[in-house]
Image (cartoon, rainbow, N blue to C red; front, side, top):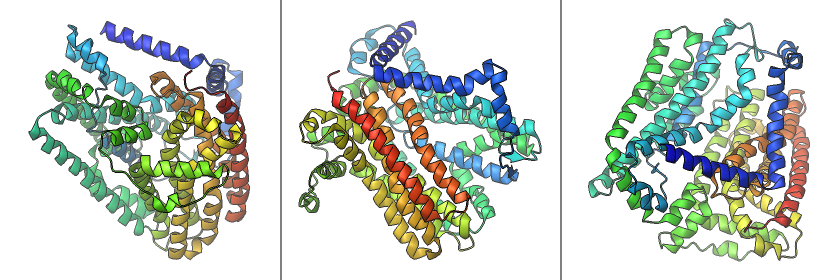
Length: 564
């Protein structure tokens, strides 16, 4: 174990040193650390500084009535259902992540394969839990306060605090369940034998059928919504609770302090631990196949797997094309379009998106369109502000999903073409701005299609629909700007340390840049300003911040060298 720990330590250390070698990256990281210290560490270390937090808790900010236990149970179940669904999608993906050097050096050493498996399992668990760990880092102070800042007349403040902590612990347990299951299924079904090909296909089909069944059931349930009680009944339906047992067990455990059902909480905790224990036992019983599977995989398509592991969709598509495993697409209609000036960059990017990211973009677009139509398909009993707010929230979620699907990998391809694009007769700021604009096109189109269909289905949402048509494209551009600013700070996707820094900084960048326009938009809606007028002001702020981001990123782009 010591050699593996030392190798990982040196790899991480060298990656951090490279990440801190650039002054711009160093400034960004110092900003993150300073932000955390000022808002979370300083109030804990210095008692007087904590008065602002206490004032916030005791302030006259509006508080809500404490919701019924059934509503909290439904919300917690929805959270764990989403986490379980996302982790389930990668359950059959090979988890070892071995490289050719491992097959040449590591496999020949007397290191026990069980130690190697334990090390990699713990490493994957850490990176999977990086996001909840970040939430704990930034939210430990609010978590310690429970829900007293949000709700009044808490029936049991200590129970609410414990529930918030158990939700976090349940998140960790659910992640452990799916990581151990992924390793178990990898060693069981990814063997180089014909009979296991059929088993792997059957499991893939089962996951696909379950996904379609759950999506269809939830979609049908949303068409029957007329009140909050209907939404709670949908979340408590036996079909969903049985289809995702990990989410059900986690909900039972997390909500035990509020419901008072400690027996159910113990059953939920025990069920999750039992699944983890069984998966770990079964995984270690198949450890003899670890090196065999890894040796086969590292000898085939290393370039493709490296691109897939790094999340580089364009490079993976190019490698598939070189291997003759993907069909050539001719977009003859688009090829006839003439785009003048820097608009040619948008045109070029749309062509590349169609050729390199067709399936991911179609999947995210279909999912986004389905989400955007949910408010319009709900029962007519949900009217007025509630229905309009629901519609705007879903539209913003759609824009976020589709834009992030494009921007997170699309800007990697943009930086590969930096030498070619710098020679064009455009300023660096123009190149960066139109690259950002190109990544926001699909999110805007999906939003507009959903708005047009929703207007035909539910005309009484017209004010909110026009607000979404104005605000969501500007929000998509803002998200693209936030992603590009961080991508150019941490451009090396092969360096695991830079990938982790990029993920952390991207979350903070999106939060900082999106808070002013989103806060203004929501504040104006609460103040009674018409939705379309609130969208105009919010959109103007989005465009302004995005342009400032383009100016800052343009300076970095002008000095960017791919060989550094």
